[in-house]
Image 1 (cartoon, rainbow, N blue to C red):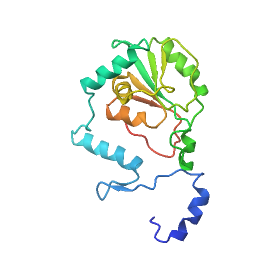
Image 2 (image 1 turned 120 degrees about the vertical axis):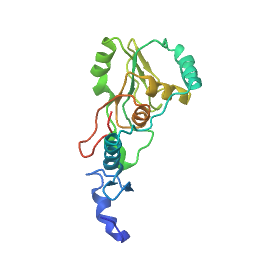
Image 3 (image 1 turned 90 degrees about the vertical axis):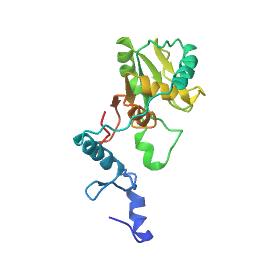
Image 4 (image 1 turned 180 degrees about the vertical axis):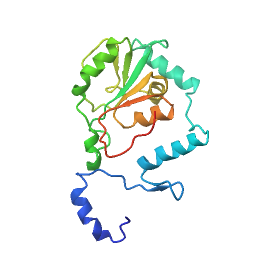
Length: 194
């Protein structure tokens, strides 16, 4: 439905915290249109049915070198296998209709330990207002550091997989065709493939 009369939104304002929704409407064709979450998977299925692969980003060598140079100070080597971790917390982009996406990072310590015990390192991305994780061998928690953007791009493109919220680095990982393990998502919408 399209709201043509501004006063009709009064009710939506009172219930928006109950049912998050995207008001962005996209049209690809007469049969594929609607919210981004509906369109993206449908367009990707259509492309695959025609033998077309979605365009993916590739990491520039200079970006990789800058990231590896930065990560050397954290005991990271180019040959290390790692997972990129991002668990959304308040403090970066906090409109009311996004608050349901935030998580308590403490709830994921067992998962972090599990990954580390499998011999993988973890590069955690985020902002400086995030809750620091306890020190653990193999965990590189970059949330408290101002770092070059090269590091985030490298982590999202070269990780064995992305683990975390459907937020920020999640989209970068998908753009680089990195597999994702997405958690803390409500089942009211579809997620992109991979």
